[in-house]
Length: 545
Picture 1 (tube, rainbow, N blue to C red):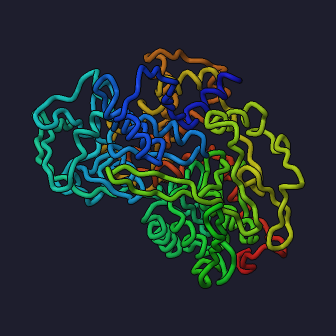
Picture 2: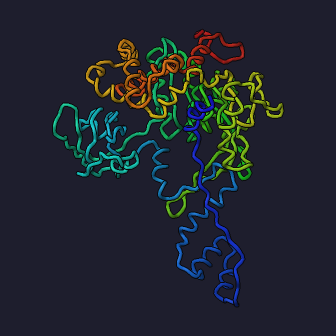
């Protein structure tokens, strides 16, 4: 069981930064050096003086720029874990992530058997306009063959991405066509979406998965709600599981839509920052809709603001597990060389006054290992393993008790479901066989599968095909022999995952999520909660019950 838990949770742990320290010792002084004395007296900033001393008096030639780059992380490591330095070389990637677009050819790809396969083509992007199709193999880029054992995601992305308006030549191998098809593609802006999917779970309940909070998240969110509203949505489940946060402005605008004018969203305050309060500016467009918010251990920052505001205002229910516990606000300050400092300037507090920032006094390593400790202590399985002192208790708008001091505690705790995990399933995960089989199956049956336009009929078709039987034989051929006991324990999970991943390769996320929810206990509980009569204090529309 420990092995299985490690396999499940280890991939989602955050990467820890490598800290490079600069150690300065006493130097031997063999005599008076007027040049050194002048530098020492001229500089009131000790760090600046040291850099100048090294540049002008050190025995060997060194790059002071490189020294500074290496010293900055050491300088910041004694602050909080979220104050970070962004080197100039990384700024483009960071900016793309937050603004929500980059320049490229507009395909999603997967590397399988040393071959780059197009899994999806971004609608309206450069590749879509020229006629590239899911299932195409990218064999050459700019006349160089990329199909090899050395090909990596990073290498392919570096070749396909580039400045907007530039050209890239791509050679495509398409099933049924002998010769390569050559395309000259002009790179364009490719959106990075924040809303992964939105669909109707039943006649009244909409579902929206938000993976991050960027510049365009609010617009995407409202577009999704408008689409679901046209399909009869009366209640909405907002899934923030795994969402690490992002722009404060985006989450404030989103929460605003569910509150009455003047109701509190959050406030921020810091040592050098006066208290700033954020209230709903006017009655939101969604005050007549029920809402349930899903969170987990990796819902952080803006996700916690959203969940905390809904919970503290008694506006809706929060379902899942305790969130990450990031209650610090950063400002990104550009520096002259194109780099930036992301500096923590204040803490944020939910409407009840909770600061949900977890402790970080014992250093960055222990801070990020907190999630693993939660698992070891049983918090992923039992809510009662979490002990919060009364000093961290707060009251919601209508008097319910909630807690600060390390994340948002859900109203309905849903343990991590490990009942369907076996050694057999663990071996399949390690070899990525469910994923590779689904990709192969979708590729081989694409013509017959693409006639399905929505998830339900496609799922019914795949269930009739009984893909699990074929998969078990496929797994055996690839090093994981059939295991009857493992199939008894894990068969349902494997079967649902197979159908969901096949559907993703045909219909994208709108194919994947409606199928995978069959084994999503947290989402199923949210649906159940949304159908229960609300207590009198809960500000939900009675007409929807």
